Amino acid sequence: MIYVSDKAREKVSKLMQDASIEDTNNYFLRVSVVGGGCSGLSYKLDFDNESKPMDQVFEDNGVKVVTDLKSFLYLVNTTLDFSDGLNGKGFYFSNPNASRTCGCGESFAV
Image 1 (spheres, rainbow, N blue to C red):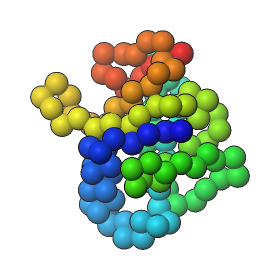
Image 2 (cartoon, rainbow, N blue to C red):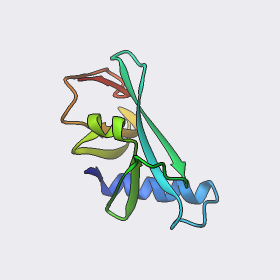
Image 3 (cartoon, rainbow, N blue to C red):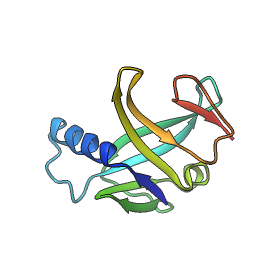
């Protein structure tokens, strides 16, 4: 399961409005893990409307989240959150599978 906090849900909804995505039933948040970043792996977020055969689909807090099977192995029980504080603004992941994260919170290692 991939979880979505209240703040992340609000920001996802706002970003969909800003991107003029009106058909929210067919669009979802795609979360992936890609190579890169100072710790070796990075998170990637996109809006998408096309599922792939091996996608894992979740819905939490009113947000449909889709990830590929390979990325899901790194994301099990991860929570997507959003911060708008002075110490950093943006989406971040609380990933119990990460053994180390970088200072900016955008990359991790397992």
